[in-house]
Image (tube, rainbow, N blue to C red; front, side):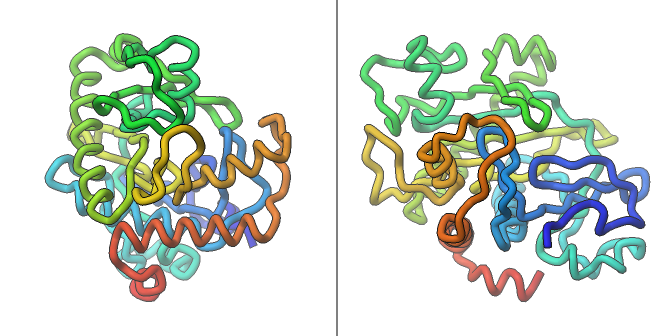
Length: 303
């Protein structure tokens, strides 16, 4: 049965994202619950991927721990046994797929880093020879490694609308020069650390996006999800061949399937067949296990 905010009728619902439900917990905390919903081309699909919410949560928690010396996260706890008493009736629904987090004033841009050329960056490059104002050499292909990692911020679009790449100057105009510079520095620093860790495990981090926010003390924190198959492109290093779509541990598999169906990328999206659902689940679980070195079943049993 799909997870919706109606299951948590006793809590104050703050909003629904493409994948997550957000609830108030007192004045200074929020509960972030990851469903098994999946989106593609900024449209939520009608078919869910079993265990996806737990994979996203478990992997985010692992990455937050790996990055804690670079930037603090918004996480207070992910142990349902440590949650406030008001959440006790929902323990089993929340186990493994939720995080109790500090309430943040979110920065109104998404921070994207790209190490390889693909997706919307490839479209920009083919049209202009650059990505978000970063000039790139001629002759690059889909999947080409970039000469250096680039920072390409984007807008935050409402559900059903598309995020748009913006220039660094545009980002500075939206959030201020000082914060924009800090976001760029942190994004590239985190991406470098994550790329190295992934490479040690035979995985290429092609690109990813981060979200940040300020807590009540003004501290900038890494928020939402981080370095998951929903927010990143992960490619097996031993299969990387520039010049076309890459095998992946992320939802690019679903994007490719939907393109092949001829869907026009406007809602409603088509249902996913059972084999696509199972293959996608397997890719997400493999991403978790290869990156963390932890059995996904072990994560579920100890969450």
